[in-house]
Image: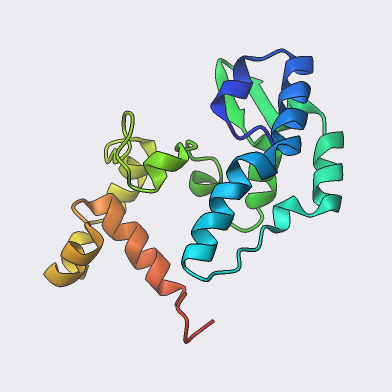
Length: 166
């Protein structure tokens, strides 16, 4: 709905609209079926607030140039969602490169799925060395092997997201 696939950036305006409608219409036959099967396997009830009818209706009315921003030879997918995210997140997170799901899930598919020398990593590395703050057991348990990953784990832990706290 918000043109999150990088492939949308190469399409004409009408082809983007057609693709969004087609993907949204066919969610039950592919993406959501996989989510449902995985959730049933682990007795989890997934909630997808972005699939609320009102959200979908609004998303389909948003101009494609707000979903994909092309400026100075740079392409930003999900642009309007990233602008909203700026109200809650630092810009280096809201506008970071969209990693394909398989890569973000740690499947190691494609290129640069565990890149630690990009723009965001360089920004974090300039803030200091975070690796010494983690025990060897924690590094091993979470597969932390660079400063960038250490920073994100420490940041996540600082929000105290756990079953007992939230």
